[in-house]
Amino acid sequence: MATQRTLSIIKPDATRRNLTGAINQRFEEAGLAIVAQRRVRLTEEQARAFYAVHRERAFYDDLCAFMTSGPVVVQVLEGESAVEANRTIMGATNPANADPGTIRAAFGESVEANSVHGSDSAENAAIEIAFFFAETDIVG
Ligand code: ADP
Ligand code: MG
Image (cartoon, rainbow, N blue to C red; front, side):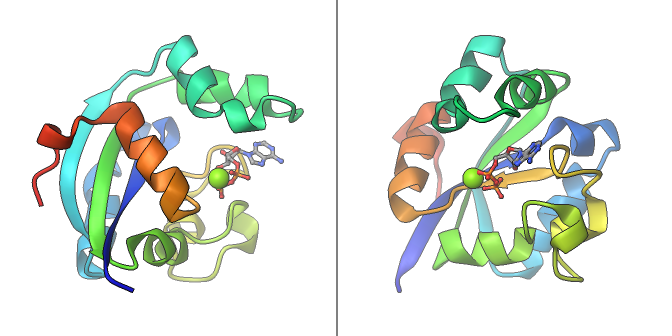
């Protein structure tokens, strides 16, 4: 696998607890470079569009309310096999099931407020990166 990019979001539960730097340190220590980053407050419309793949799920409305409840940090991570590498660093969706040493095990509050989002495939990474960033915003 070659160098790859993935979309990461530091979620409102983490920005509220001032964990942006602690989370970014984990990416950098694992060899992922933060090649684009912006702190934003998502609109309801943005959250619903970003998570549209989950619109039939029971948790969709709650998830969109949570994602708009405070600032998030949207970012592009770059490195070797970045999509899979970031999923490993993040840990399982439910922090209770996340491996020790992962971001979600360390910081996640619940299956919903689990501190970080990470793209789940190279194809979705490209779509999700384009959702937030122009190519000229990304400096590798
Ligand atoms: P992941 O973020 O690990 O890729 P999913 O794509 O399945 O997980 O879900 C997207 C997000 O929706 C999760 O990160 C979490 O914030 C929320 N979520 C997932 N499952 C549940 C659930 N059972 N109850 C509440 N929120 C959930
Ligand atoms: Mg997902």
